[in-house]
Structure formats: structure tokens, C-alpha cells
Image (cartoon, rainbow over all chains, first blue to last red):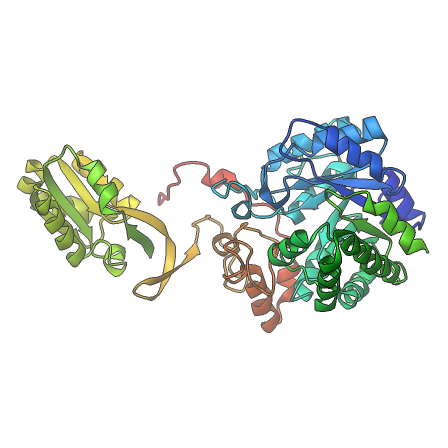
Length: 303
Length: 215
């Protein structure tokens, strides 16, 4: 059964529009300035932007606060990312109640990178829930009006909620089974980890298409050579085909501008491929720190 | 088995700075197998202490220090040496140190760090297998424990941190427990168990000072 659309993102998906979503990373700061500037750049080009929750286990500003402010100040809908790494079910439930009070409509349920990969590896990881149980919690809050234990909530939240999927996962089968379980538990949409390999992307989409939920495929162009090297080395399961790496490196040899042009060419083509793949509902563009490329990429893909 | 490792000489020295008369307790079970509190290690500690100018009033290798009956018996057998000491140093797990402390009422020095409940491949190769969570689900997980062996203690794994069956914790060197569980259940034609939703654990049972009392 399809859940009612509470968010613009889900309304667009249900209307069969091809959606674009962006991503904003709050940093280790008390300032909202950069976050709001980024939201301004993205507004009008994406239907919603994910706000990351302590990505790679670095403690940044609580994702709920920027989620609220980009909606209020900029008018850009947020996808409030929630990981189960830092908070137990009590704290997550409390945050979700607060999120709803602040007008948040989309939640993305995540495990969160392990604390040992973060900037304070000695941190105690929580994982009281896992990402699957978080989907269960969200469903119970929204559909049953209770917390995960069944305790009644007065004026339950109205969220649409998604999950992550990884087309690069090797082996892929357990990933698909896991996604299937989350969809059966009530997730509304899938946003994927960044893909670079068209074949992997197509296989993933083919396999999840039977689950009949919208798939928003993720891409992450490279801001710089060092960012490319870092992602290839540190982001689990990311597979960047050799030819892409080679052509970007060759461009970088020429100049920084050539590197960015090559990004536009490669990712513009990739977006076209993704758009032309049956059963893809949208594109999630992760461009932390160089959001200005988003409108250019979308324009390029539309040419 | 309870896997222990010995604390460094430096750390041990700090705890006995003001103590000059010492009784040593070793353990004939786990700590002997771990080579942290068997006969040889008790002898080594005795030599080290004597080199520091301390008096070792006596020693006992209790068959299983965690068994209060055995520890009480052996401390009684060494009554005078124990009475003559001002601290007891225990070369065994945390349970052993507490057992000695409770029975002897002496200041008790832990000489080992308790690592985990694990399996022995051979001496010097020990691997964690159980977290004593109080609710065994090994039947559902192909005999592989995700609480002890998944870095995130996930009940519905694997997470996005696995790559080619390796775990992000520790830099993709160790096996991802959930990929192992998947493969095992697949080979046993039991993937329905892999896909089954396991709700979050009830932690109230292990909230504090667990006990098992026969009715």
C-alpha cells in the first residue's frame, strides 16, 4: 500500500515526475551561513536536499537544525538524515517528534558509518536500533501513531521516509534482500550510494524494480583530484571505473578547469544514462562543497 | 573461554607502589590457556616482584578462580601467606579478581585485562565469539553471532560499510559477519531466516547485575 504523500518529494515521485535531490553537509560550526548559502544554490534545481547526520562519524551540527532552517529560510524541502549510530531508540524517537513539530516531511533512515572511521574513534557506538528497525519505528510512528514499543503518540508525525541502497554492493544479493525487508516494513523510497558504473546501476535498478518503490540514483562528481582519491580509498564499496579515473586525471594534468569540464562531460553522460534507464525515478546529486555544479550538470543532462 | 591479556609491567607497578608483601593468585582454566595466569606466568611475576624488592608471601593456582568454592578452599590452604600479605595480585579475568576480592577482603590487583569470550584456534590466536547478550539467535544466523562479530551489532545486516565481504571497522581486513551469515544461510537453503525482520533487542534483561538463580 502506498503511503500518503506528505512531502513535495513524495508528491513529485507519486506524480511520476523525474526528481532531483541534493545534499548538504553541516560542518563542525555553530554558523548556518554556509548551509543556507548552499541551500540557496540548490533551490529551484532540486525538489529537496538531504541534510547529513554526522557523516563518516564526524560530529557536526545536528542535522535537524539545518533541516529546519533550509525549509524556513530558503524554502527548500529537507530530507532529514537520521543514523542509528549516535542515539538510542529513546533519543531517535524524541528527535523525530521534534522534527515533525518543526515541519520536517522526509526522513532517510541510515546505519551511519562506524565511529572508528570518524574523527574521534574512541566514541562509543550506539546502534540500539539498526537501520531496518528505524524503518519499523518510522512506520509505527506514522501509520500506527505509536513508538516502536507501541506506546501511543499524541498527534503522530507525518513523514515520508526512505532508505539507502548500494548498487556497488558486492555481493549484491544480500543488499537486495535487505532492501526488500525494509520496503516490506514500509519505506517509501530508495536513495542510492554514488554510482559511477552504468552496468552496476542498471543491474541494481532492475533487481529492485520488482519492489515497486521509487529509486533515486545517487551520483557524486569529484570536486578535486584529492577528493577523488579519498573517495576511491575511503568510501566503502564505491567503484569508480578505471577509464573515468584516467580521463579525469588526464584532464587534471592540463588544468583545474579542464578537470571540472571533464566532470561535467562524464557526469552529464552518466545522468543521461540514468534518466534513460527504466524504473529510475530520480537523481540524487552529492556535491559537497561545489554545489554550483548542480545546475550545470542538470542543464548538461537536459541538452 | 574468557580471553585475557596481561597488563604491562608499567601499569602493574603503579598499582603496587606502596605494597611490599604480595600473595599471587593464578587460574588453572582460561588464564592458563591464554598463558596469562598459569604456572609459568605466576613464577615470572614472582621473579619480577622479587627483583623490585617485594616479598612474595605465597602463591596459588586455583583450578578455576571464578568458582568461589575452589578459591575459598585454596586461600584457606594458604591462610598464613594470605594473612601476611597486604595485597593479592590476580593473574586472571575480571571475574576472578572480584571473586578473590570478595572472599579475601584484601586489596586485590588485576594483572590482566579481560578481552572477550572467545574461541582458541591455537595458543596465541583467540577470536571473540560471544557477548553474553542473554538471548541467543545463532539458530537464525547460521551459527555466526552478529552481536559479537558485527561491528555495529546489527540484527538485520549487512550495512553499507561492507565491501567485498569485508568490514569497514579496522579498514576492510576482517570478514563482514553478515556476509558470512548470508553465505552460510544461502548454502543451507535458509535465506528466509536472513530476510526475517529481527526487532531491536530487549535490553531491560541486561540492564544491571544479571544473575541466574535456580528455583
